[in-house]
Amino acid sequence: MQSERFIFCDIDGTLLYAKGSGRPAFAAAFFDAFGIEIQMDHINFAGATDIGVLEQLACENEVVLTPQHAAVFFERLPVYLEENMTRWPPLVFPGVGTFLERVSKHWKLGLVSGNMRKTAYLKLKHGGIREYFTDIGGFGDDDGDRNKMAALALQRAGNPEGSFLLGDTPSDIEAARVNGMVSVAVCNGQFTRAALEAERPDMIVDSFEDADHLFQALEV
Image 1 (cartoon, rainbow, N blue to C red):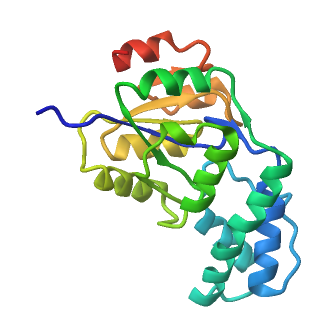
Image 2: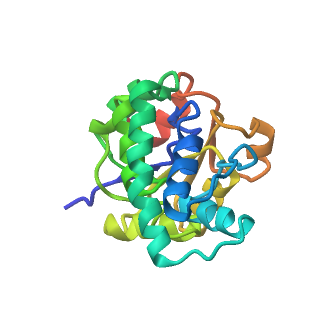
């Protein structure tokens, strides 16, 4: 019996752009957890994880991040993000819907995302692409290390061989390499094609509208 095949995807900068919903949600959740108003403009979310950003903010504001603080933060973050995305839905990149519809007939789709699990699926829901994805993945409230998140995703999927990992940052390429996955760099995010090529991904995609070589590699 042939085992199920998995494609794991990053979300922000790969599949969609959340149009500024995340920063105000982070700030509001941080205030609920610590009672401190913060600025988020300097935070770079590209390749980051929610745990990592929360730890950075706690350090910058000289507060101790206890499990209780983290619990409040991760409870409130999805609430604020849902409110923001209801008003400002994410922008799904061109060709993503067609790509997901096509590959989901032959592959299982999972996530390796710096978002916490709840906010990851909220973004997919508000982007209209939740239906294509399983509940399997590695998330930003699992671990602050993207390599370990990818390892968790594989473990939860039953350690399938020949998995692909699609992402828009050098961190995604490294996570794929470390965990024996085929790395596909997607040029939808902050990093240029040249910067991604320098990381030596197995494949690079300028746009999901120009992805014939990826379809060929996936045999779909």
